[in-house]
Length: 265
Image 1 (cartoon, one colour):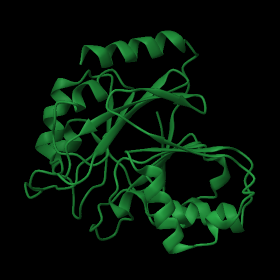
Image 2: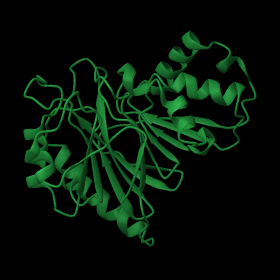
Image 3: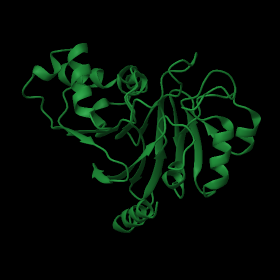
Image 4: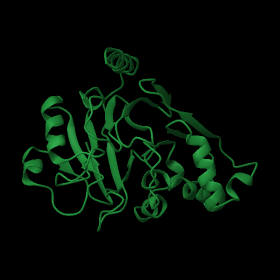
């Protein structure tokens, strides 16, 4: 991981900006099965969307957030609860709220093909329009290969989720503040360089009990990561299941996000 650590240092040196507050707005915080919570998706500073759940558009509107302010969308993997909101966002821009800002969608290999296929199935008129009024850019990521988009620098980390899909976590530098997002993953070595020295680590914790199998993280996995990552990094859990977190999570100072709430860190 020396190469990736070098990327982190290079990005920080290249962006010696004044530290700002990160505003994290959670549109949903549940798994694909969690009763009482919407599918996991969150917005940072109104401009950067991390995963696009099927209910992303109504949740944005419920909070009074303008979807046109989103400039970058990070898609962690191709399970429907993480990217089936893209067709509805693109439909919104095609039919209701005309946008002029460019939009960049960053995700695993095949991100453009899958987005266009899902959108054509859901609302075929979206890609028939030749003049959409903005530039739509797709970026396929590779493990450790960083990039830049809309005033942020990002590095993707390949993580371990399900065998038939590539899944990625993202480390994103926004104005000198660093957010790490696990996406969906089991406990794996990539999560240490992903989150270490970040300002905030938004991590999935899909099972409060030890019943996740080998594709998601449990409270014990989270506590193991907490012990190995610098104390300055704040942990916020999302993609959580039903029920209450065990006391050992809150006693460790780990926060649990709730739907339609905003954290400023």
